[in-house]
Length: 170
Image (cartoon, rainbow, N blue to C red; front, side):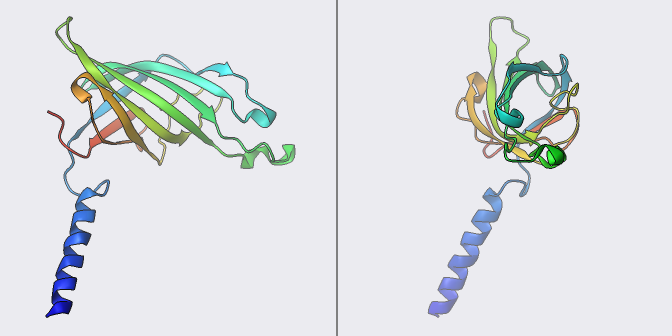
């Protein structure tokens, strides 16, 4: 009898975890198309082998919501790679991306979301979302309509951001 109670409690715990895990079940959210303003602009040159190089990106958003985005990204290149093996350097950027949404009413701010995490580092002349990144970014903040938002953003489709929420935002 006692073993059954533990088994039932364990199964309930596993079910609760599965529901809360990213990608499990139907999750409220929306997909945005990205129109970059151009390739990134170097904000800081960085150190040895470009570790710490900081780039800025910006552009417009359309789809379920309209607005703009601004991103600041730092290259996590490993400065210990020998020059003969530059192709093996870390290809990730640590990015903070702010999505600012507009509303049809000119006097109302549509709010915004702050995303943070690792993304694929664009090569020279490429835009931040030009190629898919097999990573998810955490929603770390929100303003206006998205105050208190929690969830993540999927960058697995080129020129697109798929925003997913842990809880439905009113």
